[in-house]
Figure 1 (tube, rainbow, N blue to C red):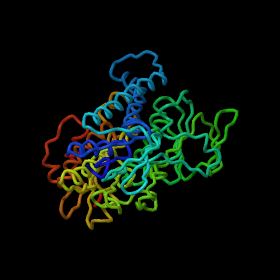
Figure 2 (cartoon, helix red, strand yellow):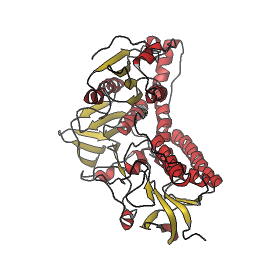
Figure 3 (spheres, rainbow, N blue to C red):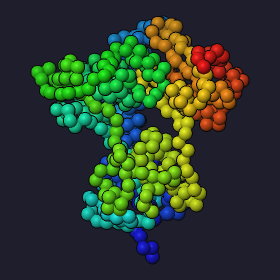
Figure 4 (tube, rainbow, N blue to C red):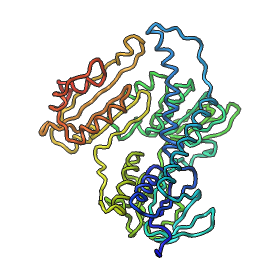
Length: 454
């Protein structure tokens, strides 16, 4: 008989933890997993999936307007928030069940409870008030939405978690933050007809993204009606006669029906008992791991947002799979975190892979930049004043493409395919030798010949 109850115990039923559990079980391990909320994690339950469904919903207001340029006559349109949320909830319920079904098929034992470490090999299941032991433990608890606790009246604010479950549809929303969650929800609410203000403490939204993308998105969001206030923060949130009142550091007072914090996410490590096992955290509270996702404690590993490496769902999935192959499949795998493609479902959408221009110039002596900005073909008839941006960054010495950045329709889809080319080390000559697909926006990526700088 084994000295442990399980070969592997996973704490956290999100994308990374579920993938690790399933693959480990497939390698013959006896596996259990605990999730305190719902299986599927942030992305599936209250993150990327429901968010993109809301993005789809918010785009119809422009689609109805654009239809006129193509000969369509549309009647009066109305929007039902309650119906949208009900339909969204049905889909999330389905996905939650899919995750649990897949775990069951893989032979993984599931617990619906919070789990905390007691030591390096044992876990306490809180709702059952008992302990289980495991040869290996994987921390996959993700991250939690952050708020500024120092702002008076912060209790009146919501985060993205609550935004998916509002009982009443707001007429006015004020959002704090400048990252991808903030700009995505600004687009969602604005597209649904909400008076939307986004407040960011720095000088420009989307810090860390390519500067041309940041400037272009700011311009396009402003054209669509989102008010972007930079260089300021919330100093007070209070209930007034006209809903909520938000006071900014510049002195302006904004009236709102909902106030939302989207100022980042913190690794969800508090209260997990990691100190009981001696697991080290970094200054941001993230679990410190090596290239194989192992902590400083033998037999304890961590994957996904809780490690604060690259906080994207596909990265967590890859890390979880690699962990299981390494520990239980006798196939050591260190995940390559370079050139990870990503998308921001802002309006317009952003797709990006590789280095920004600033990063490229810091690392390479001779960088050349190709850029094209144009009106998408659809809007030649719709009449909408919207521009698309494409940018390719190249190392002149090797001709290697260092980064690609796109803003416009289907940018995320393009970024996925560009990720393959850039991961393989494609050169600008390879791009130039690729025949264009016409008429598409993506053909600009292989027809840009004259550099704009470098």
